[in-house]
Amino acid sequence: MPKFLIQATYTSEGTKGLLKEGASGRRAAVDQVVSGLGGKVEAMYFAFGQDDLVMIIDFPDPVSMAAVSLTVKASGALHTRATPLLTVDEIDEASRRQVTFRAPGS
Image: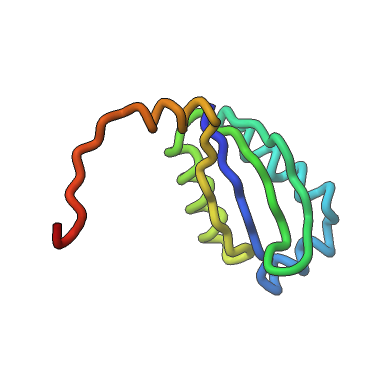
């Protein structure tokens, strides 16, 4: 199952919601959304600094991740970044594939 690194920053409205329902309330909401699309939350951490929330999530496909991303961003409560994560084996497989490429100006 594809894995994604999610980095999120709460807006002021999102932070008010977090303060109201607590971290466990947000975890339950995230679990519900992710499992509803056949996924799993591998890790979820709150942070401070540039990001307020960091997660690793498994989804059955990238379209599921995109659906969640669009819905969350439309709420206006969070600014998010989703990064696909690849295993060592996947990169090894990619490095063995032949790719024909011409750099610009070459």
